[in-house]
Length: 407
Image 1 (tube, one colour):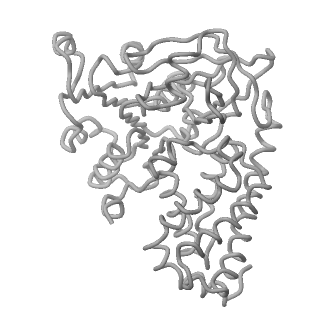
Image 2 (spheres, helix red, strand yellow):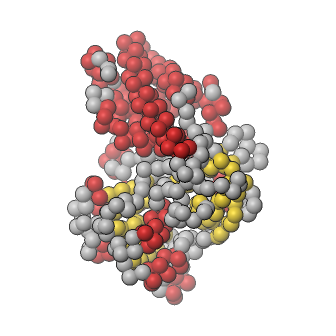
């Protein structure tokens, strides 16, 4: 437990963190990699360049300061981040390194304003918060290791099959190199893949949603080829069937609730459809009477993945309704009548699509942050309660509150 004095000092730094938080975390990462370049084998370099990791950490530090007198309120966030840490291989021995560097970054950015009293308070608080992360992640490592077909850290897998799903998305079917069992997973979870492209000084880790139901004897990830994506380019252009990659066991808390029989609305934006596919395939297999509304927003049919599969599922399963929105449909799309909406999803259209289930259904969505921000806003305007709204970020968490994001 933290003393009242420590809590009071931490609280007093909240306004400073609100203004200088991102500067502190940006300097933190610079110092961290200068001192410990080996950690570049763990961190996503792209998120560093885009500033997403720095912003996410700044938001976490700010939230910790704001809730320092009631840390139990941030435990859900600790667990969410803990899943990512376990999937990436973050260990207890990394936390002292992070704590020391974070305090040094505060001094570097704030100068004399970072008094000995403030640094001591933050050092004490960081120790308590780090212990919470370490405890949660220890349990997660043990669970991953001890489950049937489970393992600790990374395990070699073979690319058993590589399937082109669209002009920009390719699926990789991954089977264990040792021929053993693989752990079951919950629809919506992800795995971390580790690769070392030729000429790269460090290994690169990326987390990809599993895009099929569990229990198949393989894991499937479906990867969008990003123009400047080191890992996605490597997977699309260099990796072939028979090649080996390394994976950590499935992780993540964005999961389909199969204990409920309420209607489900799945909304995917672009490649954000991948966890939705895992959920849809799971629902059809294990809850064949549960009502499902599946909505996929894509640029057009050329880049949309799994369109034919979803269409076939909806045709064979009366409880599944399928809607497609193309922002800029091609001539072929128009000739085929392959979509239900031309343009971006609007509130009026969404209300009509989900009208029958809006009052009681559970909503799951994933996609680019701007898309997710709009979906969250629409659902709030439709009166969908927060406990029925579930979403996942690809990469570090961001704000879906437009006012906060614009600040």
